[in-house]
Image (cartoon, rainbow, N blue to C red; front, top):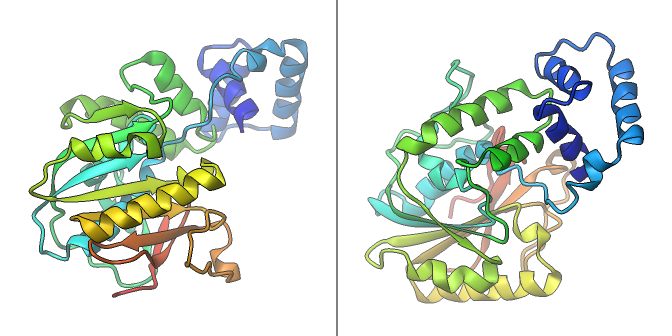
Length: 296
């Protein structure tokens, strides 16, 4: 993934040979993909520093499509009883999903580049207004900034070049972000900065902590400590926890559904204030479909 993203980055920076190939791929105009791939491999063999010089980076997609799922789970957590929340995003990257409430969600594409298309495979009530977000706090070991050109190019490089819709959405987010509310981004690992993040929230409202394909990259020891710390905070305080992760990210006491239809999907685990973690449902890794399995 890192090698592919590094090659894409070179193309986005205007590489004479890679640039036209990736641009054609983005517009579905590659007449001979095999020939294009051979050119890319030839460039890699001739100039390996194109990749070698970028290996200090880490892949970060910060996929905004997951906001369609976050909206549904947040609505279920508040159940009309909370008009406002705080939001803490662990593994926030550039913080795009801190603005989960800024994206329209539709069953079909309506032409708006900010629209998230999500198939609700079980009944999901999306009619109620989402709670207001009082504070938005992200945590990331290497946060990215949409105002920095290099960071923007890297985020685009981590998208598959042929997925034109995702690139259009990202470009629209870059344009819209200055009009969105302020967010606080803390540098550090999730477990290390969680207390700091919670300390920045408004104590008068419920705080929702979320991770989306972030705990997957924790060490087993970090993941266990993170699980116990958040479980305790949810039990003791007005804190909820939404975890949207690979099923390979197993949490203590929670069985993983091995049904074939969920292969490659993300498992959604929800911990309500005063409760223990429970499986909530499943979703496409990029939020293209959603299925709730728990209504408790």
